[in-house]
Length: 107
Image (tube, rainbow, N blue to C red; front, top):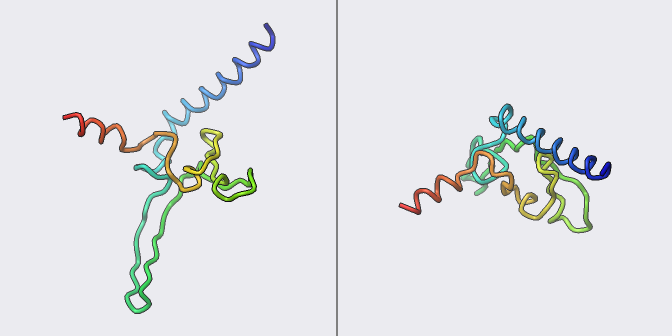
């Protein structure tokens, strides 16, 4: 019984942490389907290059977990590491456009 209570308390703590983030710190997560916001794009026609300046989500980081690079992306909010997070594709679903697009497609 004691082990079950300890296990439940871990999940409750994670749920409370997620709700606090969702309710009070939601604005820190960029809008869209990616873990970054494009601030500006500078074009240099002489060299044929463009530079994209971005602001990355504060919960995205790189952690060396496995031997190959594609698993190094890590979300501290979800406590999750995978190839989509490494590519900065949003997995948390906070402030993304998926539900809005789904409603538009259903019309």
